[in-house]
Amino acid sequence: MTVKTFGEKKAAGQPIVMVTAYDYPQALAVDEAGVDAVLVGDSLTMTTLGRPDTLSATMGEMIHHTRAVSKGVKRALVIGDMPFMSYQVSPRETLQNASRFLKEAGAQAVKLEWGSDALSATKLLVGNGIPVMGHLGFTPQHLNRFGGYGVQGKDRKSATDMIRAAKSLERAGAFSIVLELVPEDLARRITVALRVPTIGIGAGPYCSGQVQVLHDLAGMNPDFRPKHAKAYADLHGVLKDAVSRYALEVRGKLFPTASGKRVTRNSIRGKNSR
Image 1 (cartoon, helix red, strand yellow):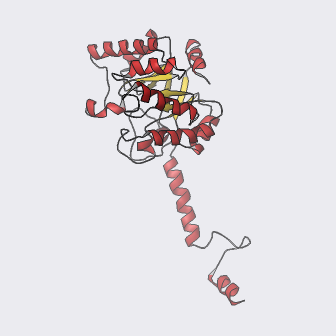
Image 2: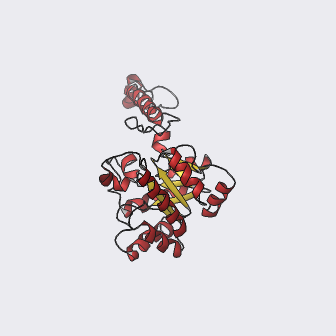
Image 3: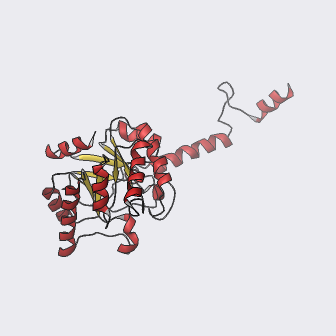
């Protein structure tokens, strides 16, 4: 998969499948499952590091996790998420940070959220050979400005502004745009208005593709189940069961065994007496 085939899939009417991943084993699994793109999202602060939001993600953390994911992906497009304040300070810093995802971490593109610097950053990066995925609607790095999680673009003005922003990102060179927590009719209008594909998350069925957080779709966090996510497994339960069975066998002296036999107190005494 490349940024070019992203566009080709939209033109052919083929839905794009994207999922997040944060380490090597996860990357192996999702790539072998046949997804089109893997996003190393700054959501790793919440899913993997146990923090309350994405604002604390650092460039060091993002490069570390993206490098691990890139090692496990053979065919999907790997996209690194530009963390908060990594592309807002200066053009020089923007270019340096984005280039690290490609040079050090092995990603093929970066994603950045909409804001006052999004257009200039997109133009700068694309002009220097770094593919950019945009991000509109609810943008987690602006959580404090929004005052919490919620659907964006519900009134006429904000919907019009979002359509304009999407077209501006396309003109700036973005190869795709994520639409997060957007009314499905607005997501449909944006998708129809653009040549580049849209990737929805909580934006209904009319986008060019969908992205989900791996931990949500695999049931890895029982305490957090977004309304827009569907759990296809209960990996938290599977892992808990496996460790519980292991603990029971260790405490019951069933694991490990000596030459395939159960280890008993008498057998231990017999061995020690020799």
